[in-house]
Length: 412
Image (cartoon, rainbow, N blue to C red; front, top):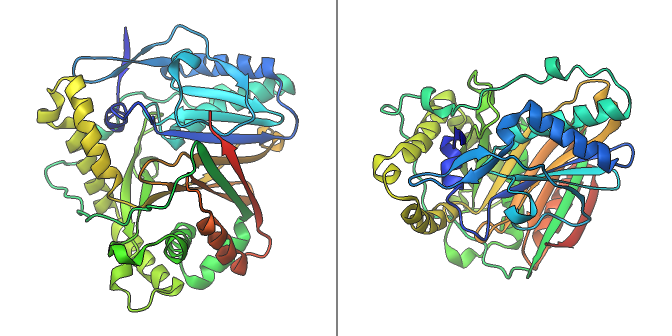
């Protein structure tokens, strides 16, 4: 029995290759070690509260769909970084996986299920059930976490006929050697107030500043000037901030920020920052966001694509996926400020997010803010690590109290 259709973005993700199912991870650090029994119980309660996550991907003739998953989720102890994908036979067919180690809880999610905003809604429910029982807290979850719609929100928010998104030429692709079966995860943490002081002096936002720093770090270390292509960064936009839609499905679009390296007489950080700020101001408007959404919806609704059998769509996606992934150098995603209500927040020390790198986008950057701290995670499958070190060096010049953690963690 079909529970719900795939949302517009999930349609595209559902056709991705078997080698990669667009996995990302949200990690919560608690003040005390995790109780495995309570955690498993809490995941089941959260699924009962949000049954639209209690699904498995089922095959259709034209599109995949979600059907009800009658099995219980698997919750297990893990000490390693998430693999390149979730293997459904190891997750009881769920499109997410919950693991724990010491005082950390990890939620790994396949993008076809939901985006970062939707994943945090589910993670929040798990935490509230867990902490309420562990510490005998009064559980106001029914008031604090709203029941959300599972309908596709994209279809009704834009006029498809009047909106045209800007086109983009091919970008610089990182061709450095990859590390076999390894991801290199680097975490930087600082006080939000310290970074805000730096940004205020430069008259830019935090995302603008870090995007320019990210581009400049790539340029300084792993950019090949002979390629004569620009560094371009995909910036996901959470549409919940712009439209009055309360949903837990995928509800985001993307814009592209270009370094304009080829047009610079002299590539300096300040020149890059000025260009990045200009593009954010031009492209992060309601009119442009409508255009991005219209572009995405047109692709999902394209009749020529819709009535092509699923097997042929998947063959086509191998070519489309390669084209799309080659249109930008990397992705930088800022989830913004994540909040937990009291008394729950006093039992959670940290929350951060990481996104798996891919075959063409070999480095990805994720930014998460929780309480007074901002955490940046660079996740790379490259064998060389100069870019991460340069990013740290540049940040350290401005942020004195900057923590730095890195490790090479073997995948599953």
